Length: 182
Image: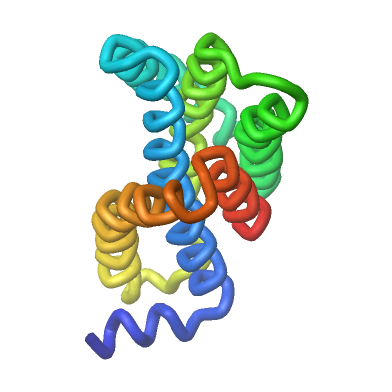
């Protein structure tokens, strides 16, 4: 436990880790919100299509993420990714305010989300060795694994709790805020 706390005492690592956790929780909440919208609009078949739209682009994004992160500042890429994904996610509530959210729109947002999801998944571990001394890399890696596990369960649960309270489009607004915080 002390080794984890000692890593979290490192300001830059703590900021990266806490921002990543917040963003991962938002990712899970958004997945639940997008799933809810797809299910309401098109039933189980639409949910299946949305899942494909979200999952398949991760493979394509992986082909571009490595070279992108190697060529440009990882910090700049993470910032650009967060701003772009926040904008993409916000198009759903904006469409709701302007009229109706169409199923194709949910598919496009899910696809863009999936395509870019790989950026922080690749960038965060790549940045950690720059922020943490070599003797603390193991607990830092463990904290990252814990964060992914907790967010993988907690994010969708948060989305499920928030949907009946504030509605699925507003859950997406919350996620956009997590991107901006990250």
